[in-house]
Image 1 (cartoon, one colour):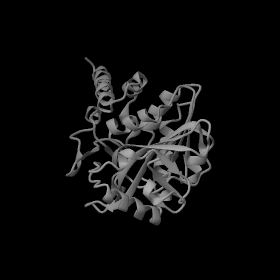
Image 2 (cartoon, rainbow, N blue to C red; image 1 turned 45 degrees about the horizontal axis):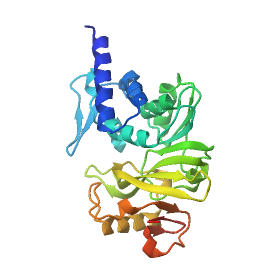
Image 3 (tube, one colour; image 1 turned 90 degrees about the vertical axis):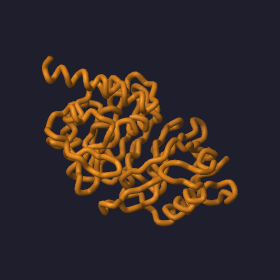
Image 4 (spheres, rainbow, N blue to C red; image 1 turned 30 degrees about the vertical axis):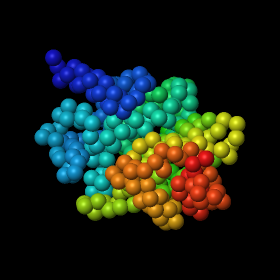
Length: 299
């Protein structure tokens, strides 16, 4: 067996394991992961793999077989930026429910690996826009995705760049509130996968955020109605353009009230959230959290 044949087998096994771990049911996700060379979206090996809680561990060699594990891999180690954990990112992609022919926006595209997965789901009739703030990563993503005819990569702040109407918006960084541009861009019935988080500093001195993933859905008939559902906890790199001090404080208080620790809620508040309102006029007893201009509510 040649090394290339061995890697193809490893990728197929990896894809099956990752999709199962992500609790995903779309067979096209497995097809996408099995057909993608993760090494093509990473700096040259040997690579730095994230091992919790110790930190980074270098692979012994530049053999790509080491990359087909369910672990993040450094892409800008000095900033703590990684190609994220495959099962978790696959889970986030799956809950967006992207269909063939739909339009998706991926905010925080990194070097493009997961944008390529999204591209596979969108299909040849769909369209994917990847937005990346870090200029080096945006350049690498543009090169890595050049052969994907349905993908465009934009360098800039995903919270400020105008976004055309989208069926799904994936925010791959921790925000302290939803950007108005993201909510406005959702089509009727459109979905947004949104990490709402609070800041903390790692032992290595990197700024990170901790919080929860929400699925925000725009009502198909009422453009001012947004359903909201908490899907999981998360620890994720911050969305630089969407950190708001007042919202950060309100989220921190709500997480503390809910007994939220390491992605687990000790109380039922998070599980009862059903609505996102673009106002702070909702009665306090109806809100899980409330900040200037928006809130997450129970009804």
